[in-house]
Image (cartoon, rainbow, N blue to C red; front, side, top):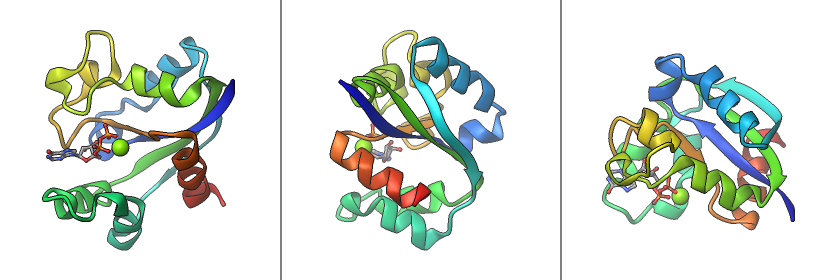
Amino acid sequence: MIEQTLSIIKPDAVERNLEDRIKNFFKEKDLKILKSKKVKISREEASEFYKVHQTKPFYNDLCNYLSSGPIVVMILEGENAVAKNRELMGATDPNNAEEGTLRKMYGLSIDKNSVHGSDSVLNGKIEIDFFFK
Ligand code: IDP
Ligand code: MG
């Protein structure tokens, strides 16, 4: 099924000028970039975006991090886009990510892991609305 999902290039990757490389990677793997913009979000916006994690011990650092510098937010579209993007990203911790995945190639640590991807079609819709509505 053709789906849409939200992808974010996180501050660590934007800072290292990986935007074009990551975008080309998605395009090569048949995920179309429907919309893209570079933004810097506030601490409040980050805490809203990541509110599913509000009970986690790393929540505070996570919100500080996502709002620490420019990010690139994208709507990706393609066959099974949600699962496909998760597969291309690799495991949350780059140390556990498979060879050839974005987090293996570019991730620095579990918190600076370069990319975000929606984890379901429903959350994809919610996250796309968050940035593009
Ligand atoms: P995901 O990004 O692979 O979907 P989630 O569990 O949804 O992973 O966590 C959201 C983000 O929170 C992760 O991408 C990572 O940056 C950060 N995170 C997750 N677990 C930890 C942790 O144990 N310590 C620090 N940061 C974490
Ligand atoms: Mg997640």
